[in-house]
Amino acid sequence: MIDRFEKFSYFISEISHHWHKIANDVMNEYGLKGPHSVYFTTLYQYPDGITATRLGEICSRDKADVSRAVSLMEKKGLVIKEGSNYRALLKLTKDGEKIAEQIKSQAEAAVEYGGKGLTDEQRTIFYEAIEIICDNLEDLSKKGF
Image 1: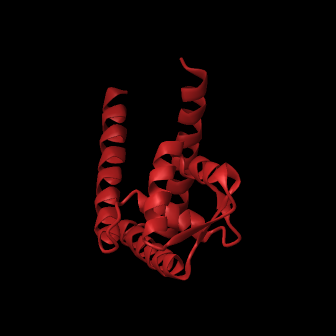
Image 2: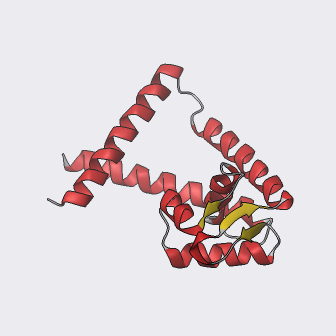
Image 3: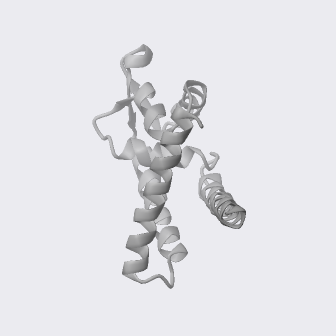
């Protein structure tokens, strides 16, 4: 059992580490940090806009992180706010959309590369299994032991 836990923890940690390095390399080009990539890809999915609160919920980030990221993205002309306060809608500018499209394309290529050597059946089973594990651990984290 411990062996399974150690393998699971190790591989999840390693995947996360490598994914963050890839995201940092991509975002460095724009003077941003890797974690900003998730904001771009999420905002890209909401062309009519999304509130900062909802952005934080979708990205599993706290208000302070969202606020800092949005502020930096605004300064760089990549995001605009329509409205005021927490009800303001955040939208990507044309430049922001271009970056989001590039991030999306590079993320797809990285995922494809990461899954190199897997059959379609293995990939399907993997994603089903990782979703079940994620849901179960989320449930456990809410309920506690």
